Length: 430
Image (cartoon, rainbow, N blue to C red; front, side, top):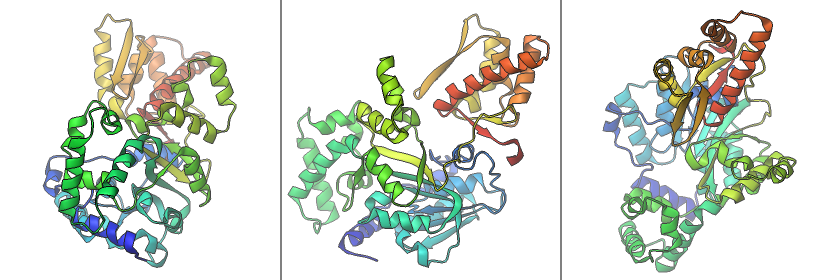
């Protein structure tokens, strides 16, 4: 169903497909998305039990130029999984199709339609639905969410992203300025010219430049596609954390976990990241989970978007409940674990340090920890890793030692998991 607002949104994405992508770039790089790494999806959404090889079906609803669809299809190219990529913009789909063709991907089904039409499209049910940056551009986001859940398996999961209210305050100030300067019937080129002229006229201490932080040049020189989507969009709403919880509850969905990177990672929704007073933190911890998330949002104040997994179920997250779980490295551990372990043997530093812009961890320079790094391959379970630790430490394989090392390994997992550097998988899902 189209109206003047959806007509304007449709026209925008036909003229300026988003995000701007050059299909030729597929020859040299693979764009990854924060919600689609299979290990991460499996850990949070499927209790670590999904093999992704038994007729797994994923829907990218509002796929745009194809980032999530391409990344999923590439990871699942050797399975019988099917990815359905749906978008109402023919221009966006054309770019996404070209990217898939260059990569030789045959496991994507392309559908040009609005996600609001999902109940009538007869596409079947899906195990996983990605709809990132779409619902907040609908005149009725609740109707869009209902459309998504109408094709979601009862034990399936969604990856969603909607704009966050507080962090976009400066953006909405400039959006309002631009609405006072023009009408939506003005040509795109004129609206973009006015927007760039306005940005050049903003005082140096305007909220917009303060919001830009250390990279104001990027905002001053952003592409037409970026600029229009940020400041001239015909339909753009944002959510506070309480509003987000209400939004999900209206569709009988539960928020599984906030996911992402940088300012959108789960740690930024944890009050403990900000509160240093133990008594105050205990008071906050006594509040419901949703209230704690709301408190963290207000403590930080700069969330630009809320990216998260959601499901009808509450028990979707894999837990470190026994030593049979498989530890799956991600981020720096995925590529640096063995290297760090090798360098650790020849260093005099008292600790092992792993650090990125997302955070850092420090591990004792002991044979057990070095062994864990060296053998962390995503295939060995906790029991195997404890065995390697015992051998490296030259300790007897007793139940007491195993219990001690298992608890230490669990502590390492907790710290790495907070930073998105490690996930869990059930051994049977390999």
